[in-house]
Amino acid sequence: MVTDPNLAIIVLAAGQGTRMKSATPKLLHPLAGAPIVSHVLATARAMDPALILAVVRHERDRVSEVIEAELPDAVIIDQDHVPGTGRAVEQAVADLPEGFNGDVLVLNGDVPLLDADTLRELIDGHRASGAAATVLSSVVSDATGYGRIVRAADGGLERIVEHKDATAAERAIDEINAGIYVFGVSALRDQLAYLRTDNAQGEKYLTDMVELLHRAGSSVSAVPVAESWKAEGINDRAQLSEAAARLNALIVRGWQLNGVTVQDPATTWIDLTVTLAPDVTILPGTQLKGATTVEKDAVIGPDTTLVDCEVGEGAKVKRTDATLAVIGARASVGPFSYLRPGTVLDADGKIGTFVETKNSHIGQGSKVPHLSYIGDSNVGRGVNLGAGTITANYDDLTKHRTEIGDEVHTGSHNVFVAPVRIGDGAKTGAGAVIRKDVPAGALALSVAPQRNIEGWVEKNRSGTAAAEVAERARSAQEANDGSQRQDG
Image (cartoon, rainbow, N blue to C red; front, side, top):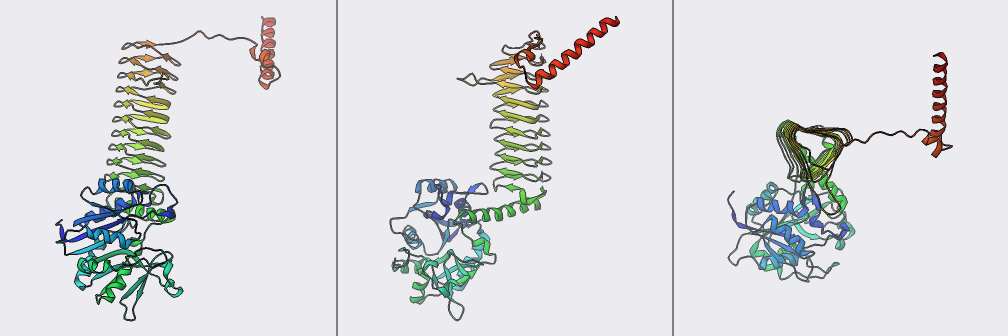
């Protein structure tokens, strides 16, 4: 794309967002895996302007950090003590190069669903009309809280009135200001100095520019966006959830059109940063988040959450919670598995029911089928870990690793007390507690003779149901033994 030398973009990112009722700045609340403002910044970048300026104030360091990560070349403007969008634009315009004589596009940092194509149409229309300013408007069913578009008798834009300053008749208007503007920079510079704070909020309203331009004899137009939801801002958590649902529906549909089967879009959530190959199948109740990638023919779900995971071709991941894990081709995970960061399961491996793994590499074709904890471990190829296997990796001071060689088969209910190494091809017996290294090909046992203490329950648990049934069973056995002796 060729840079538009006649376009500068100002992103308004100074507001506090009190209606979110949150310690987190409104613009930094997550939406489809990225902060709200990041969506606006991505759209600004897609416009390929000559310059992008972002105006910040509330939590300026936190907001600026996100802006600089998204757009390293953006100019950060600190809004001063004078409140209002008009003041924010005034300060940003003062930072434009003296020779710049094009158009200024003003974007609100809390309008994340507005796309670049809609903005290009707005700019093209503005330039074709010769207007000094063009306002993007929207027709909504509930205009509460928004500035109203007041049109003249001929249908042209007369002024914009903020909700708190509007009369009852003006509040009945359902066409609202979407907070997106295109100004010719010369007209903008001329009139910004006349903005005042004599209104209900005591702010410099950018919306007052419409009336100022009219008085100066300049034309101003308002263009309704075809799909009103694109221009909806986010002011509270209810609106955030509505925007999230709208955006997620678009993301899911996009993947469906690219060859991904999504069985139940209503219960499937996919971040913008996720990558899916054709012929992936997503089952109900699945969340794919962060930088997760899934290769072709993999089946994910139902009821699965993957965060920053890699899933190989043909793998199956069912009822699993996984973060920063790598799942190899044709591997099987779940149901009810918990993969913590650092888990790597190689091709054809298995992590099964009620298994937790952490910081462990499980080799090709190896299996951890059930009821196990594998932490800080290296497991070789072709290994089968019996049910109830635990790698005891923590000695109350330090984490230690367990090393298990290739083709090791362990008994049920084993505990490997790290640091310990199990050699290639070794076996361990059921119930073994392994505290020492096991040589290759050895059988490791830790078996104590079984001792039965007769009558213990009747003596120590007298009066309980267990004691009663035990006494009956013992009496019956004694009677049967006596009968056999008489017969003999």
